[in-house]
Image (tube, rainbow, N blue to C red):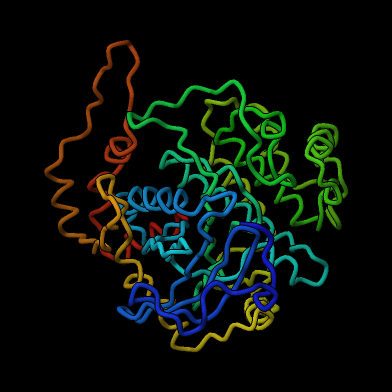
Length: 426
């Protein structure tokens, strides 16, 4: 989405109190951009709060339906692997079209990182918060990439924190309008394309994007690198420029590691490692996500950050969430916050696009995770044996890759233990 503006500065497409599809009651607009508006609403069937992202029909650049289909596919992959309890990806609940609007109904999140950074005193984050953000971004991208997708528009506005009791320590990746599959249905990587149009946001796009090259998993992480530097320094050297070629040249000429990092003697070691690792990665190379995460974990431990229970992030210490919501004139009741905490219940269904559907969209499917049945299924399922293709190369499907790594030992735990494993993963 484009830069968010105060909700009261944009003409509203939906009115407060308006009921969509006989189910979703609109509360108020919370953000607006060049191509869409986002509203908070209540699901009258469940009583839970949801977000409604709307786009005008006939707009010059239409991305919403494509984004909804992408999120639906990613949701299905996430549910198969993690039951979507702690997945750092927004959830699509419904897709609706009227005479004038296209709408996605999705899980509701808190402020994005751009808003949170601007709410700080000097428009920058502390080292602890900066390292935490970089780590969580890499975790989220590892999940997305493992599902066979690259995002191609990584920027602070496309990462949000949650709301509710533990929301401030969860990071969600949003806005998949430019996402693309880099992996075929058989698990093989798609061949590199000779040239492509620019994709991404000028300030955070990789050099490959500036050179109109095909993008890979590493290009998403290059954007994380630029964001990580900006979070500590407050701004990037090319912040004032909006010329795509000029920014690309500055990214090529300026070594961000050589900049002065406030009170630090030099650039953080994790930043140096991330940059060096990405410079060595080719188009087909898989980034070493776990090693990168360990680098940022080491930085956090060195600064005394051990867990969310004994440390606070910048937006928690100054209560940024409440201030941002107040600025947007958003009123959140205690009952709404209570519903936001109930992710086991609120995340028990997702919208599924049907390839055979015509004008009639499929209904929401109910999905519940059953530990006993899953254990029994794993006990009866033989270990995956990859099939040889016509050549000498073996191809692994995405689902088969996960099946081969989900062992009965991993699933034969109590519900609480299983839940802790997923929390630690993300």
